[in-house]
Image 1 (spheres, one colour):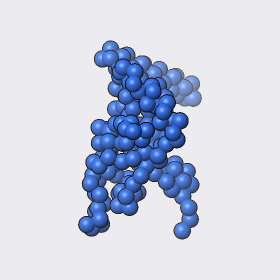
Image 2 (spheres, helix red, strand yellow):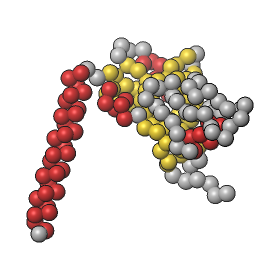
Image 3 (tube, one colour):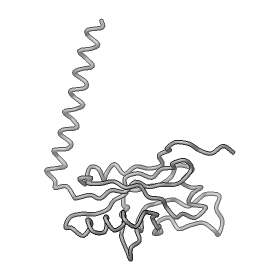
Image 4 (cartoon, one colour):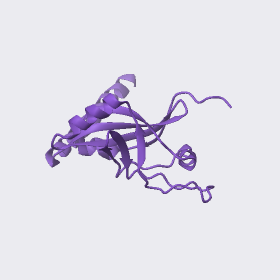
Length: 159
């Protein structure tokens, strides 16, 4: 069997980018059971309610929903169990120090396979205020309108 190459995204947390200012991102490995890996290979997971907690110099991922493997038997995993993250000690220490500041949290951004191994992208984030969220949406809409106008002008020039 040929070894997988590249990055295959399983799940993304678009809500996190809407609700938080992303300050710093990290890539971490996951400690998974066999049925969890099989379920992820089917492309099924949800990061919406997920968060990372640092306990005793270890990073743990909570509330990430990996559904039970349909072909699994009594060895199946529970869908929302806590999962250990594999990170370097320096990264964990840096995250622990920065997350102690008020308003900072650690959220998962993306779950993917990188060269056949399950990885998760986590971010140190600071919560946005309601007006920041509206401002972000306004900027996104303005960008879309500008792109539409430019493409309309280009279409007219070709014709």
